[in-house]
Each structure stands twice: as C-alpha cells, then as structure tokens.
Image (cartoon, rainbow, N blue to C red; front, side, top):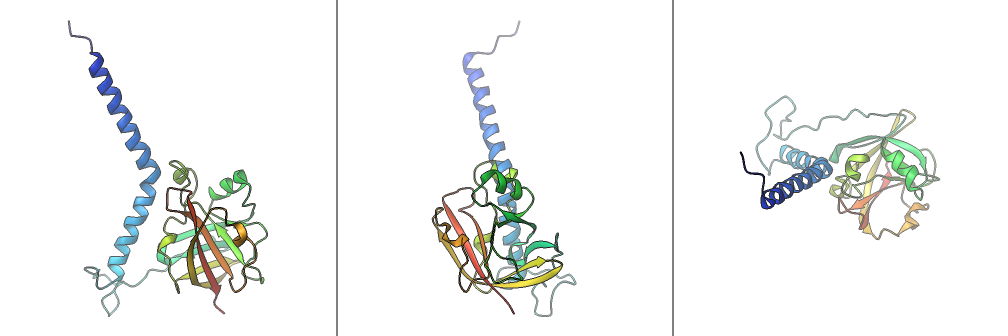
Length: 216
C-alpha cells in the first residue's frame, strides 16, 4: 500500500498552488500592460533609424524608416485615436466623474467624457478619462485605453472624431498631479482637451494629465 501524503508534502503542494495562482493573477491583470509596452517598444525600433534594423517591406519610406500605418477609428460618431500609443476607442458621452458605478460601466466600453465638459464644436474644455488599471483586476475588468499615456509628449497629436468629422489636437503639456486635484474638471483657459488616467499603471497613487490645443 502506498504511503499517504505527509503533512510536509501537502504543505508543499498548497504552496505551489498558491504560487501558481499568484502568477496567474498577475499575468491576467498586468499581461495587457506588458503587451502594450512591448508593442510600443517594438514600434519605436521600427520607426527610429537609430534604434535597430528596419522593415524592408513596402511600408518603408525612402529614408529607411517605417512609414506609419493609418489607424481606422472604431467610432467616428464620438471616438478617439492616438497614433503614437495605438489608442483607438469610442468615447462615452456625459459620464459623471464622481460616480464610480457610472464611470466604471462607461470604461467597460471605451473612454469617458466628463459630464458637462466640452466637445470639439464648442468653446469649453473637453475632459476625457480612462483607467490605467486601478488595482490587480481593474485592468482586465475595465477597458484600459490609456495604458501608455505616459509616453505622450509636447507636439504629439490626438484625433477626436465627432459626428463623423475628425478634429486634430496637439499636446501642449503633460503633468502629474495628486488624485484629489479635481479643479481640472472645470473649464481650463487656453486648453481645448485634457486626457486623464491613473499613474503609475497598476496604481491609483496619482493622476497623469495630458493637455492639448485644437489645431485650426
């Protein structure tokens, strides 16, 4: 007759199962972030002649760098495209930024427009927000469109589609603020668009804000 499992072996098995569960949870939660970061770095190598070998396909310009591929917007009635970070999502209009239930439901479908903020055709500042993942499971439960928003820099472009027309914005500033800095939800002079997400990705410690002006 085989010996019954000892207490030590049972402890080892339980420990291994807990370890596998932990690894699985981290992979499930942060896998999309790692994938997005990896894809971004590969893209930088392809577009920057000083970072590595170049594609020899028909998408390569005469200069030797990879020609950017146009992004087809998923929603032209109200949507956002940020070519630099491959962000492409619908915008859910008029979402209460103080109602966690409302904005979590909205973020499951795309980027949220703060209730009362502007649109491309008026004079008010448009405020858009999306999670960069609020906790271990938030990244998968809600649509983390702005994972790579921290890659944005001055002069980068953002396109907002509104009623089937494109509106191009140019980044003027990127800054990090405390999570209770809610004054940016109000109309901001000399700023037509503000994008907001949590930073660093995987935390809710601070807020990353990207400011942009509409190109006339």
